[in-house]
Length: 378
DNA sequence: AACTCGGGGAG
DNA sequence: CTCCCAGAGTT
Figure: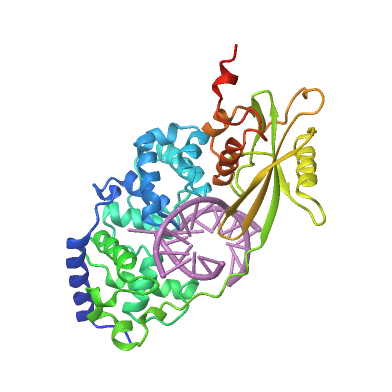
C-alpha cells in the first residue's frame, strides 16, 4: 500500500526544516562546484565522513581543478590517495578527468545518464553529481538512503540486492521534491548518519518520526533494513617480508596495477606455506620475486594489519645482499632509500613495517633514524 | 548474482 | 573481537 501524497509533504517539510538548522559545513558543500562534489563522492565511497575530511583537503590542495588532475601522473595521484584505500578509485578518477578534458571540453556532463558512462561513475555517484551539482531530479541511493527509506516506508524486502534495491530507488525518487532535489538527498544522508543510524537510532530526536512507518508500526524500527547474510569468516594469513639492504638503500617493488593495492610500492615478501618457518618463507619469496639471495636474516618484529576481508600477520626480517650485487633488477623493482620509498605511494601496512624497522635500528642497519655520530663521524 | 577492493571508527 | 561506511568493476 503506497503512502499518500500528504505523507510525502510532511516528511519533506520536517526533514528540510531539520536540515536547514543542522546541516554541517563540509568543505564539499561550500559551493556547487561539480568537480569538488565529484571528488568528495568518490572519496566518501564506503568511507565515513570523518575519515574523508583530511584526504579531501589534501587532494583539493594538490589537484584544485579537473585540469590539474588530468595532467597529473598516475603515481602522484596514487600518492595523494595514499591511506584512503580502494586505490582503483584514484586511477579511475584520473582516467575520467582525462576523458572529460579530451572528449568533453573539460566540463563534466550535467546528466546522470551521461556521467554514468565515465570510469568510476556508478549509479550512485552519477546520480549524486547530477543532483547535488546540477539539480537533476534523479535518486542517488546509498547506504543512508537505503536505511532511511526502508524505515520511512517500512520496506521489508532484501534491500541489498537487485529487485529490492530498485524498489528503494523508486521510493526515494517518489520522495524527491521538484525544487532542489539535491538538497533533499543531502538531508536524507545526513539524517541517516546522525539520527537514523544502523543501530540505536535516535528516533526520539528524529524530525520525521511522525511520518516514519517503522517508528509508528514496529516495536524495533532498527530491525529495518533487513540484515544481509553473514559474511564468511575472514582467513588469517601470515606473510614474511624482507627488508633487504644494500648500502643505505633497500629493495622495493611496485605492485601490478589493477589488483589489491594496485600500483603501490612495498617490500618483497609473500605467503608462509604450510610447514614453513617465517624465515624460510622470507628467503624463498625473496628468491622467487627478485632472484636475489640474502645473507643472514634477522627478525625485526611482527606487524598486524586488518583488511576488510582478511587479516594479515607480517613477519619482518632484515638482511643484506649475499655475494656480488646483481647486474640489473626486474623492471618493477628499485633500490631506494627509506625517504625515497616513503615519497612513493605505499600501503598502510608498508608504512607500519617501515616504522617498525626505524624503531629497531640494531636489527635493520641503515634504516633507523640517522645517528649524529654515524652520519657526521670523523 | 557473487567477488573483489582498504582503511578506520564505533560499540 | 564485529559491524559498517555518500559503491564500482569484474566475472
